[in-house]
Image (cartoon, rainbow, N blue to C red; front, side, top):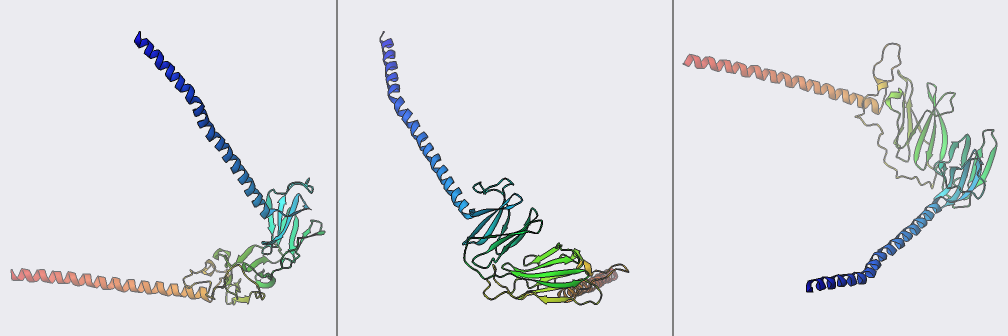
Length: 330
């Protein structure tokens, strides 16, 4: 009887304790949920702020230039820019233009062609640049950019240079350094471009075309397109304008081709009837140094081998003589 009463009392006590604890537990679980909601809301607001700040870098004055393209015109701290974005043929003012970028024009790269439209950022160094769009039929339309700060234009060129063998070059200097664009005769499309980071054609091209001292203030274009006793051509790039500030620091005038450069494929002997290009200057000097070093190495190896052979025969003779002497003494 007493046991049953005690059990009932324990059950009632547990029930009362549970009833008292339920509100506290509910509030304990509710508090983190409320904090989580606030955290998500804060993160969303921050993301929207970041997105808005990112858009500030790319927003500008959108103008429809045809062929489903919009040019977003800017001229702020970064200098004049025209961001070309694909919006489709149905775009009209007020529609969104923050879509896929297909090209960007600025002071460093002021030319491009997109969807058959020729685009050029003119007067790029002035405070009032203009985007000129040339359509497929030859008609042109100009779009002034917002006014900004003028700058010293580093771009000079092109300087035309015939190279022989039906090849010609156009030489430029820009904020990024010297640039040589190579063309074949009668073809307006370039087949190779050399610049400060890629200053020479590969040996597989069969001709020599390179920028000597590409990181200096006085780069030189050097070429050789024919074999035999033809000379290597050299001409300086256009000079950097006064006040120009390139995007890199000038280096010394060290040669671009080191003496350890292997012989180019175009300089190796060929079969009869083919033209052999024999490079001169640093390339030839490097080849001669390597050949001389190889000959010296072969001579040294022959001499060492001879000395070793003589020493072996000497040791063998001494061994035979010693055995005979011991046998006679025994």
